[in-house]
Image 1 (tube, helix red, strand yellow):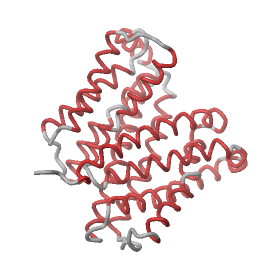
Image 2 (cartoon, rainbow, N blue to C red):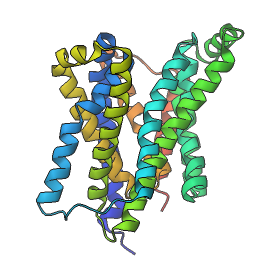
Image 3 (tube, rainbow, N blue to C red):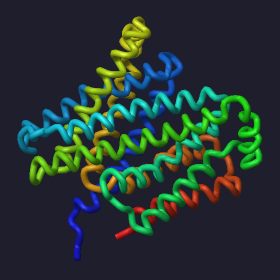
Image 4 (spheres, rainbow, N blue to C red):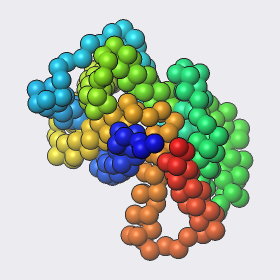
Length: 316
């Protein structure tokens, strides 16, 4: 049986989302040094909101249907996704303060496997054996690519050096970061399903557009209010950095629109696994720029990531 184009559209959408997110991260990196991490995170939502609003308006007034009906179930799922996405950043920052950046990132990379777990429990979307194998392979590959120059020995040394200096907190914060990122994906997927239940036949791109708009509005209000209360001068700093902020916010909105639309088409575990192609993009760009050769460990990690990405796309 021939699959409709919508059955496959989530693949190019996710690939595009990961590429746009890579560009957003590059723009946001310079803002982090200038504004601080949380303020740079706010920029992603605040400066992306106009584009998200324009996208919703365009779909609403130029042929994609009227405003859908929203309900409490939709709002609950969306709020869960939006707030846990902010919490994930906070936990990752706390983990990085525990004196071992590599371990913090490695623990947060459990996100994909946690997405599968939370999707099964909360949405009753059970990944098949091939999907589980693809997720496991891609996750191990990302961890291998994240290893420091000394490989496993350096990682063990870093773990030993961290022992007695908050290593327990690092594990908790790192895993909590991965869990919050996973819950955010599940929340956004749940919101798309709830909208489809309340509005028969709603198009995935309509569900994605409204999801991005409401999520970024909520995130801007919550994170912006918190920062203004604690750092009153942050508003002026964000306004002065408007040029790079527009780039980061716009690319972030473009990425989010693609992510949310993909969530409306496929389970979050599939989308997040294929989204690990972002690591591949960044890694290949880095190698292209610096012309460095692959170590055996990095080559194995790269192969596992590619195998995971192919596996998640071929599970039908």
